[in-house]
Amino acid sequence: MRWLTQVISVTLLGLKTIPQRLAASTVAVIGIAGVVVVLVSVLSIGEGFKAAMVSAGSPMRAMVMRSGADSEMTSGIGGPEADIIKQAPGIQHEGNVPIASAELYVIIDRDKRSTGTAANVPVRGVEPTALQVRDEVKIVEGRMLTFGTNEVVVGRATSRQFLGLDVGSEIKAGQLVLNVVGVFDAKGSVAETEIWADTKILQGAYRRGNSYQSVLVRLDSPASFDTLKNWLTTNPQLNVQVRSESEYYEAQSQSLRRLITVVGYSVAALMAIGAIFGAMLTMYTAVSTRTREIATLRALGFNTMPVLFSVFVESMTLGLIGGLIGGGAAYIGFNGFQTSTLNWQTFSQVAFAFKVTAGLLTSGLIWALSMGFIGALLPAIRAARLPISSALREL
Image (tube, rainbow, N blue to C red; front, top):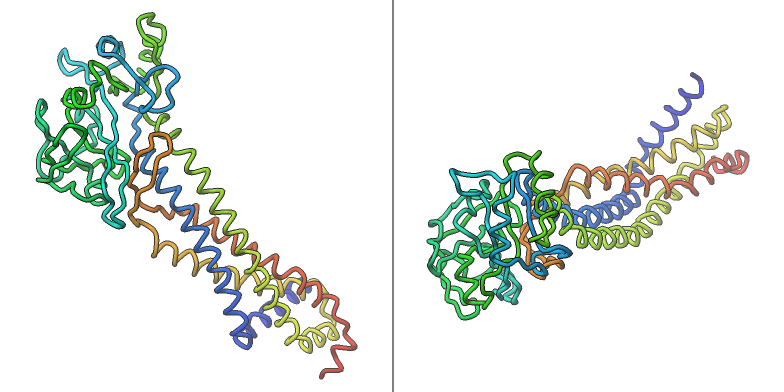
């Protein structure tokens, strides 16, 4: 109990004297806050991209592509094969019609609203069952396209991010002139980055003949996935792979997320070195200005450990303050910020919003406390080794 009382007394004394070193303490707090802002904001790009990709997947849907293809861009399925796929068991039906959409995936250039630079925007050819397969998609402006015509609907994020995609606009795609008649919402998923057209119209314009790149099917239930997969992959008439939609989009997000994670932690680590030196100098200043206090306490019988503990607590308190400021700034400044980036798997743009999650804020605080702890190591050792006799001469 005596040891605990000493720890509390010395620690409270150190915290109360922080205002006397306000300038140095502020520098340390700002440095730590800057590291946290950079770390959290950069990693929020990966979280936002993941959220846009993964939210597009549903356990009620499965994607069928050519065996060996790693994305729709490298897949190819003939018309007869698509018809066989739609006959597979496990697919939900409305009457006698399977709820499945054989689809094409092509790229067109559009200029970004923010920069005016050209970017690849995906155009997806869909069948009339598309809205039944993706039941979360809702038309929020205008109307659904009329199949058999050159009409298209665009995702809400695409309409916001790129020029010339408002209702009533015309889009040139290959030899086609497409008319925008509606805008759809897909709950922030990657589908909102797409333009939807009649797949038959795109086949003719891009000379694809009777071919597709994928078939998206709606399952009777999530448990039907294995039945569907086994039937399709063992059918000698087909050469396809079957993946749950969630699994497909999760895989699509991994490459960019890995890059962002490496970049984010690398930049934060470099900045953290400076912040640690700032915290270290602050604590050296604290030890120096408290030399007489520490010596007096030691002379009165206080042990070394309470002194060590007080230095660590003061430094980590500054780290905590910096972490809270940095995390708050990152959340206010970046959470929900709309942007778009290239999906390396399909070489097309994906619109998404930065996502500052509780996990990222927690990581930021851990980094801030760690910087405070490391910054206090050498000053704490100096304080513990401070000769009582020489320090008392300053009284």
